[in-house]
Amino acid sequence: MKVPFLSIYTIALTTLATGHAQSTEAVPEARAPSASAFTAAGVASIQGELPNMQRIDTLRRRKVQSDFSSESAEDKKIRRARAQAIKDGFVYAWDGYKKYAYGADEIDVLNKKPKTTRNGWGATLVDALDTLWIMGLKDEFARARDFVAKIDFHNDGGQLAKVFETNIRYVGGLLSAYELSNDSIFLEKAVELMDILMQAFDTPLGLPWQMLNITTGVGSSETAGTYSTNLAEIGTFQMEFFRMSQHTGNATYHEAAQNVITVMLRNNIPGSPGSSYAIPGLYPVGFSMKDGTFTRSSAYWGGGGDSFYEYLAKTWILSDFMLERDRELWSQSVEALRSYAVAESSNNHTFTGFVDGTKFYPSADTFTNFIPGTLALASKIVGSDTYFSLAVDLLEGGYSVFDEMPSTLGAESIQFVRKNVPSDYQALSSQAERNQVDKYGFVLQRPYYVLRPELIESLYYMYRLTGDKIYGDRAWKIWQGIQRNCRVDNGYVGTADVTVDASVTGVKNTIDSTESFFFAETFLYLYLIFADQDTISLDEWVFTTEAHPLSRSIAFDGTF
Image (cartoon, rainbow, N blue to C red; front, side):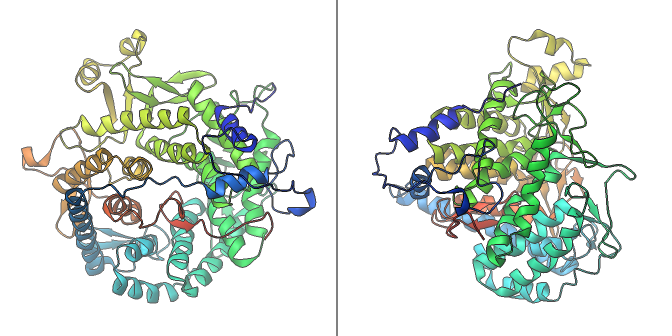
């Protein structure tokens, strides 16, 4: 099958190069580069085409964040009061962590004790470094800095390290702390840890093991005795590894992350005999490290696939728009998403689902709520109104899952009924499920909320990109739901049933779950929605999947 790459994204980018873009800025002439000008993997497209420097120059000068200069004094007052309330909530949770679990990976809030879940290196503390800095909690940041300086990454706490999580939480947190504070200790510790993680890539195809024994350097799959992994866990290294190569001048990190993409593309041809890969750009979640092929046909932008797609767009942005292959793959994937993996529900909302082969299944988890934010950002950059509109529609759908609930909190996963597809309704397994569809428009497959950030993340992007305060109001409504249902003595925990609200029942149906992402992502995105809009501007920073901002000001010319 010939892979089509001419998407609306491609067309939008082409107009930038030919002078027919929405922007009327004058574009200076730029010489076409020679192949010898670039050494970094991923700079050339799949077809071997080199970056269009005229187009790239325009993209580099394009501003995407909304102009908030017309904000009224009253709106500013309300917004800043909300920012302070979010900061107060963070300090409340941080005080509980300090009292009962400082330096531990997590706090068991309900039992007031530390938890070791990420090798005992202080996942919550490292993950939250940038939140501390951005909120202006500099004394706490300084104390955390001293803790980081003493972390022994060669002591694994008696646990195998999950390579994907170690990268996004620890390495990403350290890199961001370095770029915000310019304190070299954070870069030193990030290099130390990334060099350890590089052992996971020492495999026949250069594909990373899911788990790593830090002491022995031996890797393994999370499913013992197999070579299985998933799309997100092989493809969510690009941003951190690219930036590390920039900071150190050592291309090895970037090359390792890019090799994963090369192997995936080389060993999987969509539609070929015996292949599980059916639709170009919709990559199956299951993956084999043994031969670099997809192991099953189910493709999904939610859990298991999500951050792979996210990093195609964001690494392209982080690379100063030089990694043409990432741009090309992202363009193909969003076209496939729009064509095959979204549907309108019976109550007129747009959701994504998963695709098995070419068959669509109307189920979505909360991880898919990252899509509107990343899609909106990339669409603004390239000037695609079509895909920005899709981002808006997906955000409306994702928000409805929260807004329909008495708690104003969203379920971990839902199943919806497609518009004009009566078989979806008929296929529901019980009257209770049909009652939920009649009431909410969807079935709550997993009705709990464990402080996840993805919808809040997309509300942040949409607010910063449009300036429409409705997105801030929605985030505030979710925060109030967290306060009512998740705040307990010494911090916050998950809630088991989003269909009830503690303010009505008088009972908080708690789940012992306070992962580091609550401090790193949920609190940070909530705060940034209400902080002054020049705080971590989208024109100056790009966020990793764990909400660690990395600077867009570091130029890249295709070499390290």
